[in-house]
Every structure is written in structure tokens, then in C-alpha cells.
Length: 241
Image (cartoon, rainbow, N blue to C red):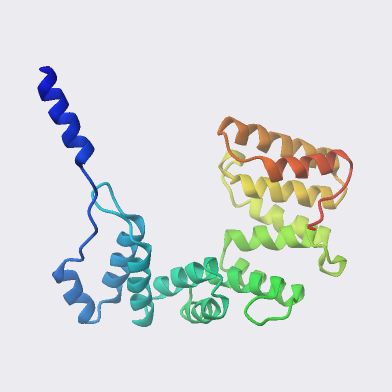
């Protein structure tokens, strides 16, 4: 290739810059006519960005809130999670409750965590939290099974611990996967903690060593997983600090 042409093409590539996403008038018109799903689509597009335009979190939140205000359940769910990340807990709880009333099961697990940790004005109450986890479990919410079992096994409050129940819950979750390698790493970590809580340290160590090996192959952060393993090797259960 001619060197001058190559330099021109290189400079053109370097000067390429993404543009901001401009919402088409046709979509705006649909939202103005009451189409909440389109508002949610716009929000999702702005959150994700693309190869051609930048993501815009602030603008995405405006459209997400618009979709939620229009009564779209999945927008309520996503807004609750975003507000939770922002630590705007009181408002997050309002949207969780609204989404739950419309049948969104995943928010039941988040409501449980608010009771467990004492957020949004709730007093810390593991037993109330466990009731919410059970509601979510009946809807098949994977994270509810996992976190319920984790808390029963590792809570720093001994009155909140029930290792035998934790083992039943994590075993039920485990059985829902078609094969073991399809199970997410965090669930392996939870099962190891549960096994240690019932003093089955050899099995806990074996599980934790396997998951650490697999995570290391993928160059994932092993810090907490390794700390848990070190605890099991001392023949101790992991208890949250």
C-alpha cells in the first residue's frame, strides 16, 4: 500500500469518535402516546451504548424513571437496583415494592437483603429476611436460594445461623442445574461455606480448591475465595465479620 494513503487512512481512523445517541422523534412520539416499553428500550440503549454511540447513564436514568412512572414492571425492577447501587435506599425500596406487587420475583430477594442488613429504615431482622427469601425461592429466584443459605451458614449472629437448613437449601439449588460445571462460581463458594458450617471440612476444601483452580484459569479475583479456603483448612467454618 502507498505509505501516504496508509497514513491518511490511519489518521481518519484515529479521528473517529463516537457520538451521543439522539432519540429518534418516532420513538419519542410512541412514549408520549403512552408506550412504556419503548421508554424502557430507550433507557436500555442509553445504558449499554454501542460501537457507534456513547452510553449515557444520566440520560438513561431519566428514561428508566419515565418507564417506571408509566407502570412498566421491568423498569421498576431496574430502577430499584440502580437506586440501590447509588445507596438511595428509601426510594429503591418503594420501587421494589411496586415491582413486587406487579409480580416481579427478583426484587423479593432484594427486599430480603434490606431486612437482613437493616436498610431503608428497617431494623436488622434475619428471621423476617428469611421469610422474604422463602417467598423468592417459591418463585425460583436463584440468588434468594444462594443468599439465604449463605446467611444461615455464615451469619455473625448465632441466632441467625442454621447450618442444617442452609445445607437443605443449597442442595435444592444445586439440583436445579443440569450439570455441575454450569453452576456459577459464587454458588460453589456458598456450598463450600455451608459444608464447613456442618463441619464437613474435607468436602468444603475440595469444592473450594476446585473453584479457585477454575477461577485462576480465567484470571478472576480469588481474594475472598482464598481466604475462605484458608479458614476451612484450619478446620473452621467461615463466619462473616
